[in-house]
Length: 381
Figure 1 (tube, rainbow, N blue to C red):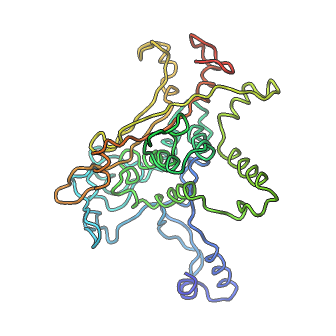
Figure 2: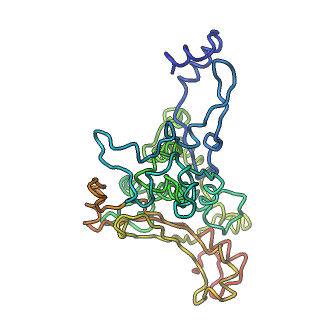
Figure 3: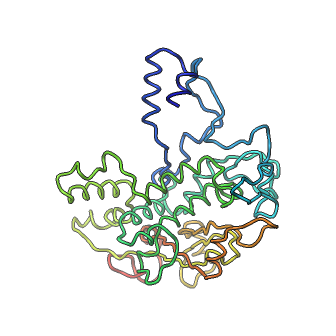
């Protein structure tokens, strides 16, 4: 970029050259913090984008919107490389060999073959999927996702528990069920939707938004350092940790703030409140590795769908989901599938996830009359 593109393809005056080279040297891979902003980033929203060229401002196809194969070719024409034998065929979950471009939340081939093959991008539906529980005000970002990230960054668990979905012997409850990979898997499902590449392991990385998603996942797992996070800039370790935890709380904390809004600030005292989570243990490869979603709902004990009591909360009772984000472990013709996945399936490997529900309980306790105990600090529901 600095030695070839800018000197040869940009205006030659020194001021412009110096400005562009300085920008190039400062450039870093962008990341999408989906917990703070549920909307697809502006960088990936539009099919065309304005850029600075040698001849001034011009529009080009936005490479972050979708990946288009050259000359209208389909994914099935790409073939294996020297170190990879997997070929996209109709033996896959979807006929991924047919599209000429990637899609997000595009219709399946059976629902609309033309839209599937063309690569339909529905960024509005992506945001709707991320806000996948409807019990909160729709004009704010999903509090369940934000709270999960907050807990992920503040739970005191071993790194292998933090990083992967694997259920480790002696995993402590409840903290040991939450992990970065489970959150990452859900985002793949929400962005891919019904038939977008992001939701399917073999083709997920073709969608350019994959890299914005993985940059934030890698940041969480690897602890990338930024100038404002350098510990030697603080007088004491305690000051550093206080600053770090304050920023994490400002960005992601939901439940504690919600409790404080309901009781703490009104009472003017520090309170201790019961916390409620749903810990999920599931077999990632129970369906032969095929992807599936576990959806969680909450309704009154003894109520039925046809009851008026259940009908009052038709969507608000959806409290979260878990996506296994896997691919078939069995043979695909003569092609090699995921050997590691097959080995984990043979061992009966279990995976974990955690969904915080305290804020949901606080909300419904305040808006509806539910039988049984009343939701007060320390009470059981």
